[in-house]
Image (cartoon, rainbow over all chains, first blue to last red; front, side, top):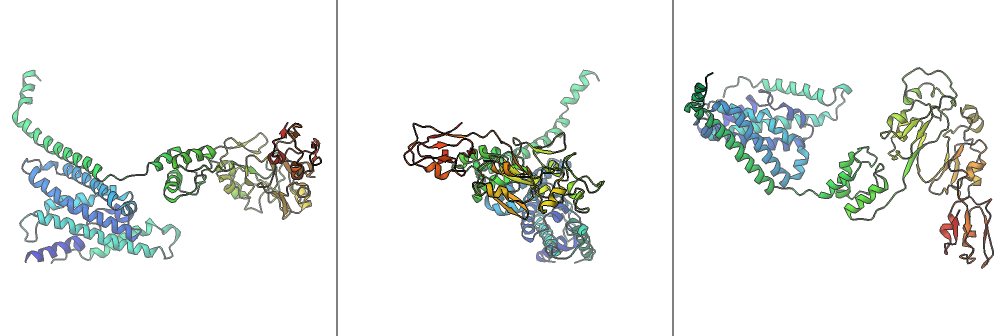
Amino acid sequence: MGYLGEIFVMAMTAIFIQNFVLSRFLGLCPYLGVSKKLDSAMGMGMAVIFVMTLASAITFLIRKYLLIPFNIEYLQTISFILTIAALVQFVEMVIQKNAPALYKSLGVYLPLITTNCAVLGVAILNTKAIRPDGVTAYNFLDAVLNGFLSGVGFTFVLLAMAGIRERLEFSELPESMKGMPIGLILAGIMALAFYGWMGFKI
Amino acid sequence: MPIHTASIILMDSSLVQTLTAPILVIGGLGLAFGLILAFASKVFEVWVDPRVEQITEALPGANCGACGMPGCAGYADAIVHQGVDINKCAPGGAALVGKIAAIMGTDAVVTDKMIAVPFCSSGGYNNTNWKYAYQGIETCKAAVNISDGPNTCSWGCIGYNDCKAACPFDAIIINEHGMRIVDAEKCTACGACVRACPRGIFHLVPERRHVYIKCSSQDKGPLAKQNCGNHRPCIGCGLCSKKCPVQAITVENNLARIDYAKCINCGLCATVCPTKAILDTIAGTQKKAEIIPELCIGCTICAKNCPVKAITGEVKQLHTINQDTCIGCEICVAKCPKKAIKMV
């Protein structure tokens, strides 16, 4: 399998088979919170892709050149959280300066990426992931790619959810089902659908 | 533990090594990120209009929504960015308009301070006629739903004080007779009671107007008289409307209403009302107009403008004011070109 093939496998895994939201159940808060409107879902997805890619890259470097040489891998979680928190702050400042409209539509959810377990999850999973050959660990490029593709997977389901919920607005629902209850049922059904990918081998 | 073993542990080189690496790495990371963020906060600084913050601070912060915006911060933002009028804050009143005008650098457009007045003289413990004994949920909104309310008058106050509960400023007081009294000092005309009253008894009235028609009944005269627990209903006779010197009163649906844009506080209507439904809170205390003889030039302007024809006088002659008919409306004071009329 050439490198392109490996990337394809990685993409399929990150986006469908091991989707962060619907298979790993990470990052559910923004999944339910920002999926009311398509454009804010899009903004959130872009922010997550950006943060995930950068976080994967930086945490990989921190792990490889700081944690492993000094033999302090037990500090992995705290150093990753520190990195991600600083990164989100930075991204927030950039967005506020360059795209105020996006900043307003993201609202409280942008700072929430700080504590978004999906971002920390991708960083930690990268340290344990094995390349498709089954032996070697991820190299830098793999880690960055995996971060990016996981973000794409997150954005994909977020957009799908937002699209469905926008249509749900026009459907007749019992009063008690409106809003979050139907959203949770919807999330469950989508997770069931994604369950169909489980065990796929490419 | 003996002292020497403790010092040996402290100086143990492997322990120092195990501690240094994590402290340096995590501390270094923190420092690096801190510096980057500090630098970024300068580079990506967003300029926020300082006026928004200043106005937000000047606003009362009650978030009552009387301005129509979602909260005080929303109003401050709307003033600066959407050019919304600066006189919409009812709780802040005229003083606030001045402050905002200073911040925005515009002229202060002061509006009349309004207060809420209940247009009903019934609803207390002793002056309400009951149809039946209501024992349901003790709110007016619930009570009006059962057979058009428990009191005989289907326009009047029921007395379960939804208005008091709705008032965010504690401006509505219940007196010893169970009547609702509006504290003009505390009332900010936010309109919460106007919306809360299921019978629409509360109205916003300019604070400088002191004559109220204290009835909301649209029943025909005899029925209104029969139903009113206070025996002071408006029966729609129209006497007040005929007597009003400035045509400020209109009778519609058996109910007289004062147009406060025209009202001059003269209180004539209150004196002629056969059922005493009109309340003049300053009755008897109005000042009378008096001409200062040395300043009067006999221009007859005051006589032409007097709504009750209390001023008589020929051209270029000293005019006289009949103190019995003068109602103290101060129109002549405002009209006199020589400032020859004073109120005593």
